[in-house]
Image (cartoon, one colour):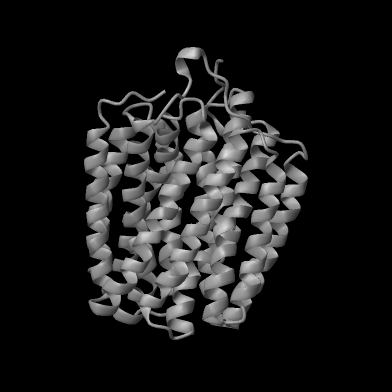
Amino acid sequence: MPQKSTLPGAFDRQAYMIALLVFIAGSTNAAIVPFIGFYIIQVLGHPPATLGLYSVTAALASIIASRIYGERVDAGVRVRPLLLLSVAGAFVAAAAASFGHLALLVAVTATGMGLSNAATTLVFSYGRYHGRIEALDTISYNAFLRMMVSLAWMLLPAAAFLIVDLAGAKAVFVNAMLMAATWGALAFTIVPRGQTCPMERRDEGGVDTGRNLPLLMAAAASFCMSFAHALCASALPVFLVREVGLPDYAPGLSLSVKCAMEVLLILLAPRIMRLISARLLLSGAAITAIIAFNIIASVTTLPAMLLGAAMEGAYYGLFAGTCLTFVQGFARGRTARATALYMNSIFLAALFAVPLMGFVSQYASFGTSIRLASAGAGAALLLLFLTRRQVAE
């Protein structure tokens, strides 16, 4: 089937509505996720290693829910009920977090945010399905949807840190509950009641009959880059405030600059992929990441922090704008499963990275955790080299 123009203006109305849904879903997550580590360590006063309890629970819930969502969507189950389950998870998670009890954070907030995070599998699979039906350009539309996530993360974390500075931590979670309610209303409005995204039918020779090794290798590269990103991102807020001595608004400002650069690079990624392969572009992102982590770990002033944030946004924008398309290229028709595997690589990375950050930061420093992220980017670079003979769709 021929694909339409790659220009954003060529997307149809429903494509933009799906993008809006992605933005609100991302905003709900972004209103809570980057603040939780700061909340547990800096506001509630728990040791850094405690963050691992929350992260392990949230990541496991995300992995399980994302896997179930992916399999069910490929099998033709309706999208909207699953999406509303994720909305409910986000709302309950924010409500539980407002009480400030560690047990509630681990048992309820982490589980609810796991369901909320898994909604990304649903909306991206729905977007890919709609794009296929309407013959939209896959690379451009994937990048456009991913840009909406980054736009949410550019705005909401900074807002969360500003809110806590002005009105306290409880107000952050009230804001997140309002975002979740908005998300639920949009899900009812945008997603048709009977909407399904069944597995793409393939010719006999293209049927997925066993283990898909190229897909697993692509997901492993995504895991390593996500591990590096999670290790740096989880250590950064407390590193900037406690170890460097910057003001409380610095983490939010850093994340906004990072996400602004990220959005720019996500928009450029489809154009760059028409000049070089996705694998080479991801390799460039991995090299940039190694440089960025060492710059960030050496920050002592606000201008230096902004430079590090821009470098971080550059590498992650290239990664975010390319990796989903790279992984889906090995899907063999099972797009939702490939999307779930991509999302699970991110969640699994957090499962390992955040507890590791807690232990390294407690017994060494937060700056050491950020430098250690270079190892994850280096491993991703090696895996991308090993995929050079694999052929994507």
